[in-house]
Image (cartoon, rainbow, N blue to C red):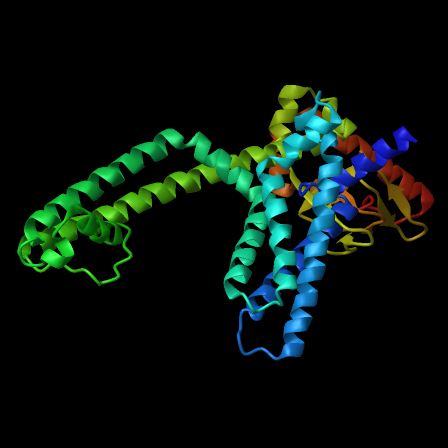
Length: 397
C-alpha cells in the first residue's frame, strides 16, 4: 500500500511540474492556463460597477471554481513535495514545510485565500480586492513560468556587468539632478527648488519616458537635459544588450542539455564516445510530435534525417508497414542518395525525434566518418531488404 501511494505521489509530482513533457503534463498545463485565463477575465469584468446582478453571480461562480482548482493544486503540490529532488534527504514533513515557505508555495497560498473572500462579499462589490486578487494570480503564473528561472540565472550570471551599468546610471542621475537644480532653482523654485524634485525630472528624462510635466527653461538646464536624454539612450541600450546576450547564452546552454538528454537515449550515438558526442549534439534539434502525426510524406523533397529518441513511428511501405522504435532512424536516403522520400512516416504514439539537417549531415560526414559509415551500413541493409521484398528502390525514405 505504501509503495502504491509513493508511486502515485511521484506521478502527481511529475505531472504538476511545468517542465514535464508527458501527455498528462501537457494537458495539465493547458487546463491550468485555461483556468487562470478564465479567472483573470472574470475578475476584470467583475470590477465593472454597472454589471447586472445575474452576471455578477455568474462571475462569482467562475471565480469560485477557479479558486477551487487552485486550492486542489496547492494541496496536491504540498502532498507531493517530498518527491522533489531538491528536498532529497529530508523527511516528508520537513519537505512539505520547506515547499510551503518557498516562493511557489507562498504565492500559491496567497492566490487562493482572497478568492473566497471575494466570493463571499459578492464579486464586484469590492473592486480593490478584485484588483489585488488579479495581481496575485499574475504572480502565481510568473512563479510557475520556466522563463522566470532563466531570468534569475541571467541576472545572476551578468550581475557584475549589470552592476557597472547601474552605477553609471546612478552617477548620471544624481549629477543631472544636481546640475538642473543649480540652473533652474531660481526660475522654477516649485519644480526644481530641491533635489528630490530635480531627481524626479532626472529619472523621467534618463529613462526616456518624457512626461513633459517638468521642463527646464534656462539654457544651462536645457543643455543638461540634452546630455541626460542621450545618456539615457546609451544606458538603456547597454542594459538591453547585456540581458539579450545573457538570455541567448542561457538558452544555448539549456538547448544543449536538452538535446544531450535525448541523444544519449540513441545507442548509435552513445557508442561514438563523449568527445564525438559533444560535436553531434550541437547539430541536432529536438522535436516532439503527438501520436498519428505525419512526419514526412512520400515523394516530397528530403532535407533531413531523423533519429528516434523516444516513442515509435510507422513506415508505410507499399507492401506492409514497418515500425521503428527508440534508437531507430529514418530519412537517410534523402541525404545519401538525394532522392525524394519513398515512404510516409507517421508516429504511432507521442514521439521525440532528433532532426539532422542536410547541411549539418555533410559537415558531420567530414569530421565524424564513423557515424556516417553506420548510417550507410544501415541504408544498404534496408535497400537489400526492400529489393528482396519487391518494394520500391531507394530505401525506406
